[in-house]
Structure formats: structure tokens, C-alpha cells
Length: 31
Image (cartoon, rainbow, N blue to C red):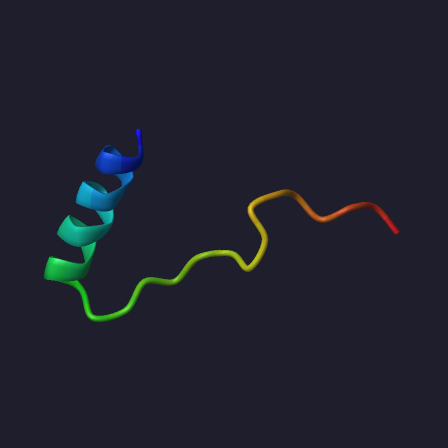
């Protein structure tokens, strides 16, 4: 699994200079 993630990140970074992603991997909690 880790190898697949590394390959996908490398492929994305080869095509783009910047990756934008959410700060937290989970949904924000209700206030």
C-alpha cells in the first residue's frame, strides 16, 4: 500500500508543482 501511495504522489508531483489537500484527513466535528 505504501508503495502505491508513493508512486501516485510521485506521478502527481511530476505533473504539478503544488498539491492542495485538506489539513485534516477526517471530517470536521459539529460545534
